[in-house]
Length: 346
Ligand code: HEM
Figure: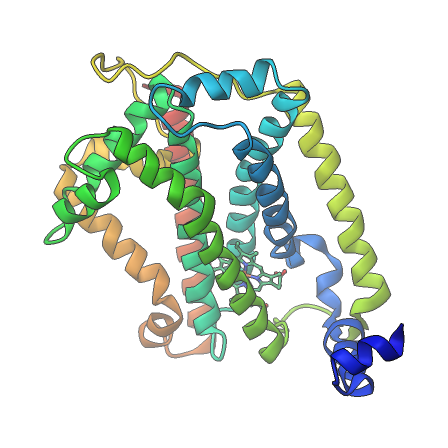
């Protein structure tokens, strides 16, 4: 058998195994990564394939048309065997993925691991966060419930306020001026293949750049290394099993509902997006839309280019660390406060 394969794929196997061992098995990992909170990036990495798998199962039954979308979600939830469980897995997996990406981003920020030479990986990572939030937004709209339909309408309406490209973007996404069957088809296409493909490619690139530089070794932690295999590998298996059990429990204890079917002629009294858009949603309620979007745009640019801005704003190492701490703490407190206010108001 070995010879048969060797004849068909004539490559240097000894070299192949040597490289694989060096990159994956014997790769030295800094000691601080033994604490999961400092190795949090692996969590979305584990969750993403679960999303793909449960998404494929849902796609077997979901029908992307305004007449059938909501009914097919109801059918999956109430009639397909274990359909509610698979749907719950997809729903809670998406939420945990967003939470874990935020936690990962916080750890990278507070350990100042975005600094030279990792600036590009910071930007790539932030793009990944944007794509994961977009895939969640498009997924939410697919259920075609009254709440999700109007959240899509309001969400895409906001895009029209963007200078120059606003209207073009709105019509591109909606497939016309209004939210119609075209919008559902486009959101479905984005959700099931374009965004998953883009996210997969970016994750591969993110990990590749990470491997080229090695994980950063921030100050204040014990120095030293341990091998990827078996210690870190076993940890990943244990975390995966924990995540699977936890998501399964959430899917059974708190299964996502189906809501009322969308009614394009009746605007509901209270429209709310998913919780991770609450801070932006609340902020835009408080300030005029175009000014709010401008401020959000500038804030996003600030985050994206922070690895380059930080050294310009503070020269001394001590000042840079204090600046990062203040910016990080203020951002987190603001995001949590805004989310809480929006949760308890209409
Ligand atoms: C789908 C989303 C993401 C995945 C799967 C992912 C995965 C990972 C993994 C596995 C690591 C190795 C270290 C660790 O586990 O902490 C890592 C490192 C890193 N990530 Fe992410 N990440 C994602 C999003 C982000 C975001 C949103 C940012 C920041 C805006 C970011 C910036 C970085 C940087 C700069 C490093 C290098 C850190 C170091 O060397 O200490 N990543 N990522």
